[in-house]
Image (cartoon, rainbow over all chains, first blue to last red; front, side):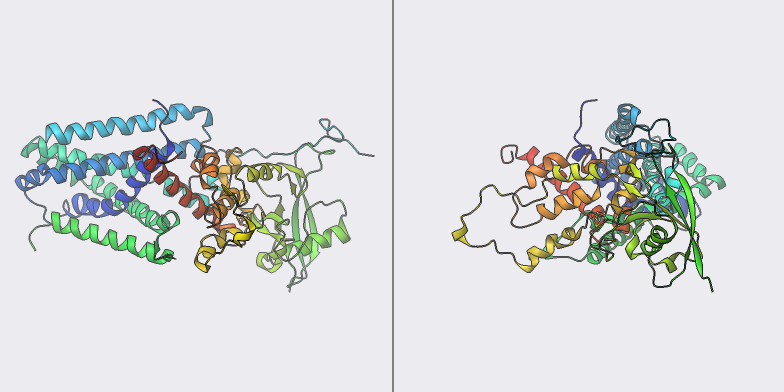
Length: 116
Length: 141
Length: 247
Ligand code: SF4
Ligand code: FES
């Protein structure tokens, strides 16, 4: 992994933090708490498939997922680095965190372009 | 004149003391605990994103797979875990939005917009996004 | 009513000890006393060997910063009665090597401060005949908060990153860089960015935020650093899109 500039990583981290802050609480509540408990009714299977296939949905889900992964990667990298004082493992931690985020981003892209 | 009892001491050379930093330095102060709690919301952000992709994938694999996914969501332990997830993500949202004006300094006609207004704008955006998601996803009312 | 209060002071006399130790003193409790007054009482009446720094006794010189019950404070501005019933633990500021007792070595900060060029930099100085540089109240307000710093180092003591990574330039130095960057008379922002945009500059900061909490002058170094990150990021993307426009 080459030297990626900190400003780019910080932009991904901040973008992810902002998107996650605005979107995730409502999403978690609706999809994974309110709907399973029967408090709200989600669109039917067919409607949902249609909704997810819309280009804007694909793009939004991809952006949300990818930015969230990079948000995690950047923040978690520093948590390990400073929180556990793993200074000697700096390079390894960076490869593992940003690498995982990149793999997950590729998987998300594949899912949203080729599978859905 | 100097009463040298410390065998490492050399007169006229500074002999500084530096404390060792405990591994768990961040549990020694409330503010640090809050900081590390805020930082540790990040794996949960990633989990939520991954779960959303799993749900999309279940949709793509057909009605039966999707029904299995919904049944999994209804399991008691999964529901409790997602309740905890919601609390953690709310903590992320609140800490994130409250700190936003620290980085974002806006000016209107040469005058700085007060921090409180920047925070209020972010909360308004949160409300708008949440309302939109309810409109998009909730049926039958 | 308590008439005396216990003060535990961290002692370090390098000729005699290789590790610091604690020493306990009983001082009279006076409601109008600051922690510094109690230390002066110890020095004058109980133990003349105790070493610490102070000068102005009014919160402007920035020399009397110490850890009191684990928090960095100006001891000349911290009432004893804020810590009743005691005991009060007084230590040197964390993050700095201890020279003796409560005295830390600040030379690391002074070296870093000089790296951010904390003065007004001009590409060319207009001739005197052109008159003074005028500044509107709004332009003054942009940087005035950052100019209130008294170099007391409380923010460094509050910052876990500085202690963990001594290479980190640190809160006050970055806030002082911003003090000049945001001054309408200054033209040195690009130059300072070179020093501050590397891993030991703004990017080492993970926004713990304690520096701003402890600052006695409301300088808000944490805010200064986050603004700097945003500016550096915007700069970076601009120079990617328009590579020819910036140096
Ligand atoms: S920024 Fe505040 S805490 Fe830090 S040295 Fe300056 S006055 Fe002291
Ligand atoms: S003695 Fe000058 S600031 Fe406290």
